[in-house]
Image 1 (cartoon, rainbow, N blue to C red):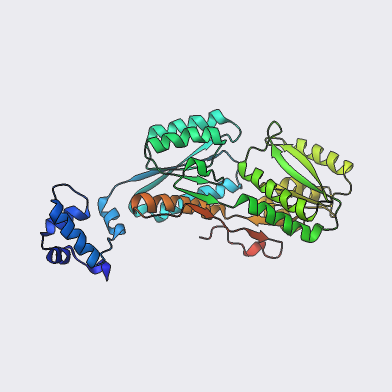
Image 2: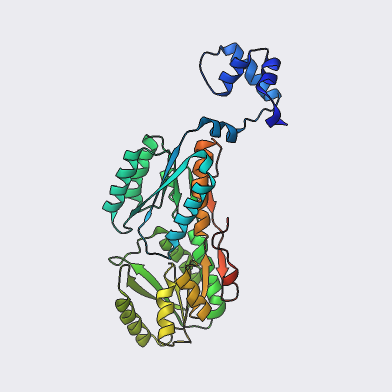
Length: 354
């Protein structure tokens, strides 16, 4: 087997010294062209595959990866990203992997720039980025390219930025899927409420924008008669603000029985429906955070779409590890599963599975 081939065996086949083989394998200088060609020919004939794990361990170098994500509250989608990243750091501890997490305010480009500057000054071996706007994210990624620092995009895919890899859902397909599932139970409705969280009237997440495009695409093609009523809740609003806006909405739209949101905050509406005893209204949303799971069990959330945030955090760090430490080729685009959770199966969902 390839891993049992000794340097001595290669040297004998190539007709060179053990030292020469060692220098070729580790890409060191002071090897003649002829000797190098002999060794490379022997390696090919013997189908030699280096043990990258053993080499990396022997090298005894430490590696720092930065994870740049939005600031968030506890029990949120982003918290699971953190947990997954830290789990991979633990699993790869023998290779001296260190994961540093930095936070930016999602709707504040200057906050993103400040954190980007800190990361660049630290000169890490790799970076994982949840993008802000395309323009401000490009400012960071161009500098990373200039410094030859590999980076991974998480959550939102921006291929123009030329990342090493991407992890997240296919947002358009996810939105299309959500509409198809929702209309299995809402096909007879006249209207559906689309709840969005916005700042200054704009959705700040590219992923949520793309989900909405997919959702509307399906509705346009299959249920053009159903009116989509948009309710924009302020991104950093208070609970009292939300209650007042929801009271007003349902007073003005008594025919709304089904709602959907492309965010992980379906529980804002779900909790309101439970506390006001509106048992004839449900909302569909994203992410198996505990507040959503509670509303799902109680019946105010009809469905949740899970996207394995923990898995995404883990695989982003592991991909940097494989590419940088083991020098392995990695897959560029990695779409996460689109999984449907209901009251009947939510308790069997394993949030921290890999």
